Image 1 (cartoon, rainbow, N blue to C red):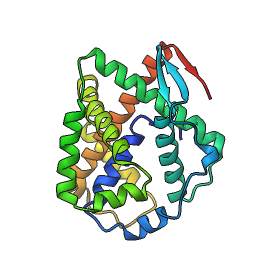
Image 2 (image 1 turned 180 degrees about the vertical axis):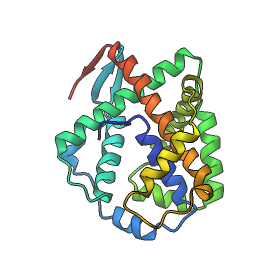
Image 3 (image 1 turned 30 degrees about the horizontal axis):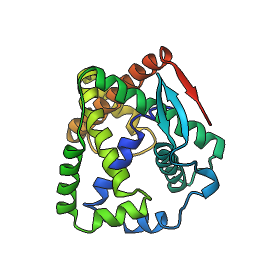
Image 4 (image 1 turned 60 degrees about the vertical axis):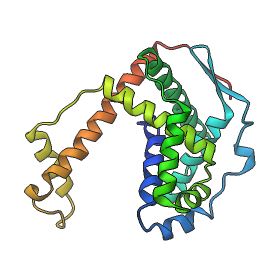
Length: 224
């Protein structure tokens, strides 16, 4: 659960946006049955970590913790509270480092930009977005904050990560995907899809390594 946590919140956002355009009835019905116990949450204004002198508050931690717990629930994976807590702390610390490093590169997404994106999403999805936010236990303000982070993350990643994939890597990826199944389409039919997925995987892995290297030099203090 520790690996690739930076982009986990991004993945949640993408999942919700994708759900707006698809039939997620069964999944969302399961989601409504899930709720994080109050004793596993912290106060919204409680400081959970200090990263290079900047405080990370409980409101962000609670959002991350809830989504990690929800993900484990949906995957029917038994996860100890201590493991979820550690994963949530790792994630919010990584998140803060991304915001700090993006600011150094003059990348700053305003609330107005996030509001515009949110307005567009509402227009495209109607009441479905509001319903999904309720089911995933995310308030509109939290979602807007996540949009700010998502846009910042995308801009920062574009400026710091440059990877490519070779034909050999794609074929190797295909052969691994074929293991244990006879249903996979011919290579030529899904080559572009495989290339896109492999490029995405390498991008996220490279980016995580980049943030990890910065984190090693950072002054980090956890408070919970």
